[in-house]
Length: 219
Image (tube, rainbow, N blue to C red):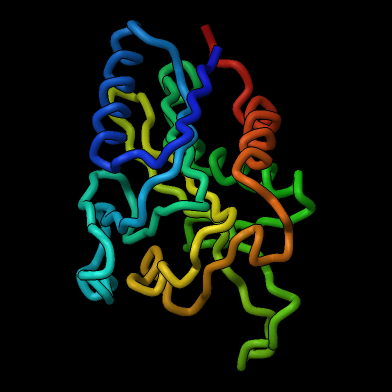
């Protein structure tokens, strides 16, 4: 069984890292079960292992935390549902690419619960929404906005870090970085798309779709 943990107050980023690493180590030792931790952070930027200095455009706006997860710069803050996923990939297949794809599938299935079509794009990790409600790009295509980010770390074949879904964050806070190093596209949220969705609604959808995507771990 996967344990679901929900924090009802914003969690300090370094404290969350310590908790994740401790749980991942315990899972690897067989001393704890798998877990999904749902939380928010105070406003902050994180820099993944591929982050480029020029993509931090406003370094004094919020605290910046270098982290050893994959990916580039991302924003976390109130109104964004972060899901830290600590799974034993020894029992779920030692395939990191397949695991990242499963995280994307999970986000896409969760968004579908609200009749939002999330899509993946080659060369762009995360989940995207086509904005038919906005003017066409100069190339004549509808613009695409990012609605969810993915960044993972795996140690001893146990995963940690995970996903973030924009429910109702302050989208202006993303302006201090180039999110995930991608300059050509914007950022959106469920509320920005016109949906009166809460974090609790998203939590219910995440739980409902999790088993559809990941299924049970092999014994």
